[in-house]
Amino acid sequence: MMERLRKLVAHYGDCEQKPVRFRPETWRPRLEPHEAAHVLDIGVACARGSSGDRLVSRGDLARLRDRASDDDPGSLRDLFVAVMIWGSGTTNGRGPRYTEAALSDTRMPTVLRTTREAVRNGDLSGAYRQFDLKGVGRSFFTKWFAAVDDRDAPCDRALILDDRVFRSLNALGWISWQAAGTRHWPTRYVAYVSAMHGWASSLGVTAERLEWLLFHLNGRMDHEC
Image (cartoon, rainbow, N blue to C red; front, side, top):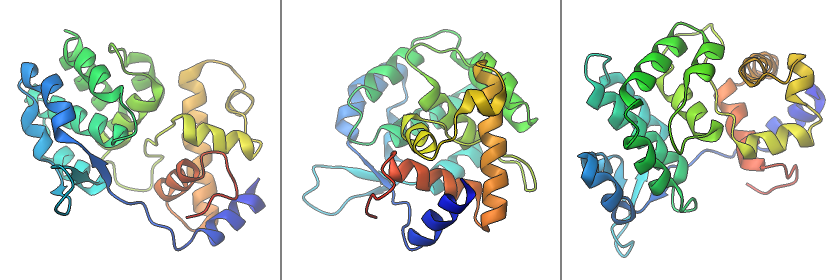
């Protein structure tokens, strides 16, 4: 496992994560009823002729995170919407609909506040157990965990575990329930985060870098950059 990861990290060393393109006008009808359309100003505008598309990066999410406050539910909601936009881009046509479903869920303020607190306290299993919003599954709520985790190293900061990362892990022979010793998903998520940080440390890269590489490969170990 480690030798294969080492080769992948070396082979894709020049590849970089790019900002995600999104189409504000696709999202606007879903966000305006919830007074969240202003989030569509995040990031930067694309070049001319792009029909108003914008680009949003992980750095943009980090800046929005740094302004978020538990005392302002609106700021946490805005960060969540930005995460959903970043995670959906222009390829996940269900993203706007699922985001609207979450915004309509009366549990949202409590879920966002309590899971953010759990993540920042290092209780990733607890955050996983507590996240329950309409339309939002593991692929997206772990993006929320990664976005709100502002802890300083050294610690096992939250990472994204979506289907693309899972395909790459399986292709490498790593099985989450076997690593965790249980099929309990919160425990499997913690096992994944711990393993990724351990591998990254041995490889001399950040866990976020390794996570992105597995996402980029999407289970295809010979995928081009």
